[in-house]
Length: 272
Image (tube, rainbow, N blue to C red; front, side, top):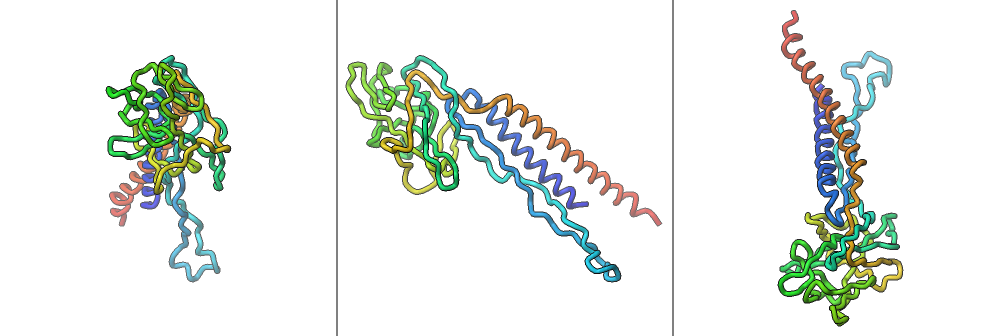
């Protein structure tokens, strides 16, 4: 009986974690460049059950069968598919339109990202192109991280009158070249970890390689556009209802086990 309680409780925890993930996805449906998380649920190993004190029974008749021991949320993996582009008309908004990208040995498709750097010199990656120009004239993201060029340097545009072509070359109002925006290629996006605010950290040593000059990776940078979140709000709402109903069903199972255990303790013990 206790095994049933543990299994139901484990399933409730898994559905609660799934619901929290889906809620976060829905909350970021309007966040530029946000990539929705996907849940991977997995069951614990089954247990082989056999009866005790069955020596006088036929051979092998003491085996009862297998018993499921619950499920858990194994991992949360981001979905790096391209989001829709939305025109804003703002010079500081840049959308990274991903074309072809290589497929790694595991069959996973790569992904492209803008490269940014914080005040401590730490490099992060993002698809959020909702940028701004700081007080010193440098191009920064919404967290104040500097957008880097192919030389790993900050890009000083001066004011919002700059221009960016499809290959990422930046020019002033007077068409003075300022360098090319660095676009990084993650051949295995699963090696990136979300840090919040649309930022991703590479978990391996070093930095991601550049996509510039890589014949297997094609892209365009669209100025005056932002990439919208790839969250499907209708599907997310449906999955949230499913998670809630699964949670409720396991809750009722747990309550039934609890009532049976209470009856066994309070009533069965008084018989005789």
